[in-house]
Length: 332
Length: 229
Image (tube, rainbow over all chains, first blue to last red; front, side, top):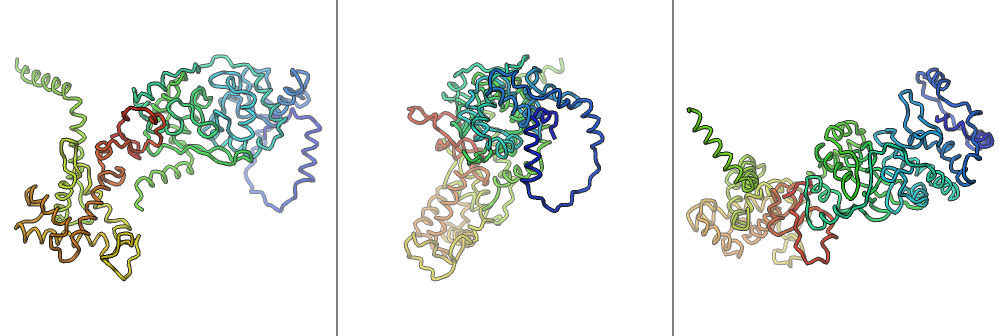
């Protein structure tokens, strides 16, 4: 329960939720599975780190206008975006709960092997190059003209929650997110360049990474890394590709991912996993290639990282990979 | 100095290896292919049948100036593996009578014999016929005799007792082609030599960069497993 975030909600909204749970949800007969309670530990943690609701009550006057205020309220409170998108200290408390802390929504939490991206104004690894409409589209449809939701955690958030928000609320969230300045100490960058595309289009594959890109990726993401709008994401300047921590990118190359199914865009367009046909060394070379071409600059990825992430794949992901490998040799 | 000859030999060897490096890439491929072929133990075919299959495949797609042939490409291994498929057991077809050998090709398979049997009996017939005609098994004939024999089998001129010679030849030729050109995952087209020969790019999915450009496609082929030829 992300109560450090929920503490910001107005009494009116909490009362509305209470009324809904008490009167709007039909009771069912159920026997909870008994398990050893760790709540006493959480009690200590809460005393140390959770804010006092009275002290963090949401103050719309701190925001530039009513739209931004509404967005801030949703992002910091019920949306609890920071629970994943804000880095945590060793003792697990989020490093910031609102824009007063520079770490707020700067990304970096590893959830089931996926990294929540930086939502601040950083041009390469964050939302700097996204328009407000891009953010709205992403939350409402799971994709926008150049990017897609990657990995099950944000897919679930999109499919079960964000797509149902009103357009006003989605625009408010986007307006607030766009007010967050870039975080400092960025290790990644993006300066669009057509040099890579020109080489590939001339048939020049000047590294094994380039060969791997041409043989595995370019069919969909294309030699200019632009992909096809709302179908295959653009890799140039893509925050998931350029995340300082390459965990999501390597995970995606190994296991693939499907876009969330939404009412507005119901196709779960997906990328297959390549773990069955790429070695750890090849995954590392490919990830490094896409992080350093078309104007992307991000730290290289080592084979050790790929090996570690491969070892951490879930049983379901491993089964899917085994199936794909099996299909390659299966007799009819 | 006692070590001079060794050092000099080594140096020569290094010199030679460096100058031969590009050739060696090809050389090791072919050596590996030959090793793999030598190590393969056929599952369906007997030693006698295996010798026939390799000799016939080598004549249908010979190794020549254009590159490796069917044997080097692992076509005989491909056909041996093919014998374990439902296709080879006739399980993909309607296999009850009436069988009308003279029916048009559009009427489908017209024999009680399934491909596995066509191979078993066809190879027996072929060897029997070459024994009678040339006094030797097919595999032991000279290359010219083998080509002549295959031509007569293809035309139906060779007299076969158990399976029509034309039927046997057409299945053999079709399977040799399949083994030479289908993806290496099925056992043939080793190192994508078939794709390379005809300039087929393999499993790269998208060629939008090359549409409407008056240039030849410069990249080597790639297999479904992601290996380049």
